[in-house]
Length: 102
Image 1: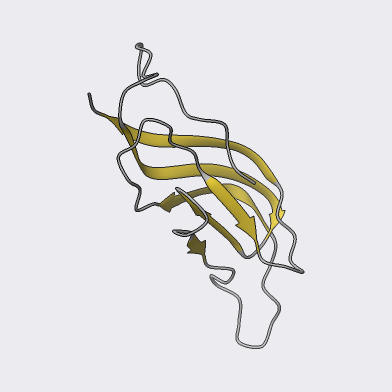
Image 2: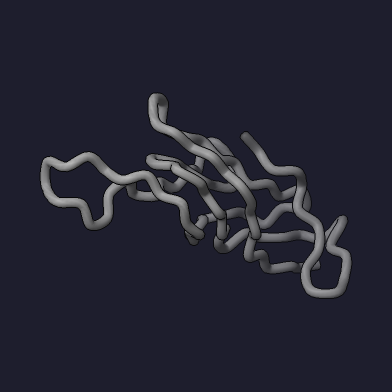
């Protein structure tokens, strides 16, 4: 899935200005094994495992997650998401940390 084009930054509109996405903060529910990026060619993986013992199944996450992105300066920036096939991925909300240029 892909977000709508991002607009906004503080108290000023950014439509028509160049933007770069540094991080995306998402809230997920009962999810595991997902990717985020500025497009489908530059997806960054959020690791499915964190503290489970070796051999135990990875637990599903219901949390707020920050994913750093390697974006490009563009006027029409979006965030792309993809879940790993066969694993659950429920995206509840998203906030993008963006820099705004001219």
